[in-house]
Amino acid sequence: MNRTRIAGALSALLFLPLAACGGQSAAEEPAAGEPITVTHTQGETTLDGPAERIVVLDLGSLDTVRALGASDNVVGLTKGAALPEPLSEFADEKYADLGSVVEPDLEAIAALDPDLIIAGFRTAALVEELSKNFPTIDITFDAEKSFYEGIEYSTNIIAKAVGAEDEAAEQLAEVEEALAAAQGKTPGGQTALILMTSGGKVSAQGTESRYRVLHNELGFEPAISDVDAEAHGDAISFEAIAEANPDVLFVVDRDAAIGQEGQAAAQVLDNELMANTTAWSNGDVTYLDGGRWYIMIHGVDNAVEMLSDATATN
Image (cartoon, rainbow, N blue to C red; front, side):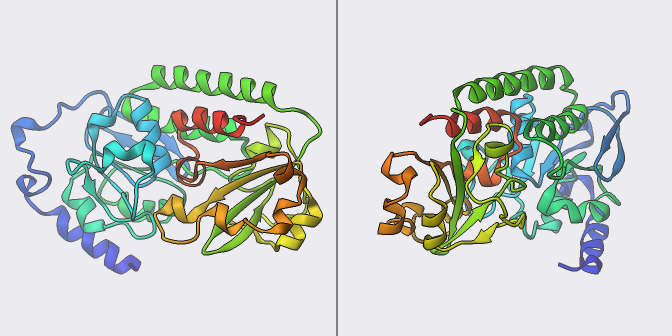
């Protein structure tokens, strides 16, 4: 949807009566508290008080909202083709389906009359337009931040907006503990290769990818040092994997993560070249949960589970 259509959709719906915007009567309007100014990736946003009608356009952020105890205030989210299993409770019809993160339903968002929209990463480009009519924050961070720093950054932005800063501190302390525990379980000196399968094809992921915690914090040495930092990594052949011969393999099935039909990762990788690698021969192949590692990766509660996944076989 182009910017002209976005502006039109939001502006037109802004003038609908409140009774048509989520069915909320004047008597049910939340009382305004002290104003809250939230500093985020694209600037500052001022709220009348802790958000009570939240639209979430990023599923990692949804995990954080839930961890901070604000699930009851969520009115809609981008459910896409399939929600990750850990977020299955939000498939309930009481949460409006706002389409996908690739193309959120802007008319549906406006109809909900949210007092906070949380965007990030794929939906960050919509923040400027959405902000014209609704308080909108962007939790996007770049690859320069460490695994923990990124989660801390996004969590604190959301916590400020929902009035849950004490809860955020507790959740972040749990992430720090989980990270230290995972680092303690990781043997030094092992090489690793992170693979993602999609549409029957395989790509390698490097030290600047969304999976960089495995190398940069958990200490697995890259089996291939010059992997491109593109969003979906570098296409790689089975011959190249065999030549790299990693001690450990981490695998993410992107098709399963986004609810797309296709060959399962285990089937894609089932061949003699893979079977002869050190990782395969020793049983050091970890299939990471695609929902957690590809979609929910920066959620504060999710982070603890991710770290547990990564060290399950080590």
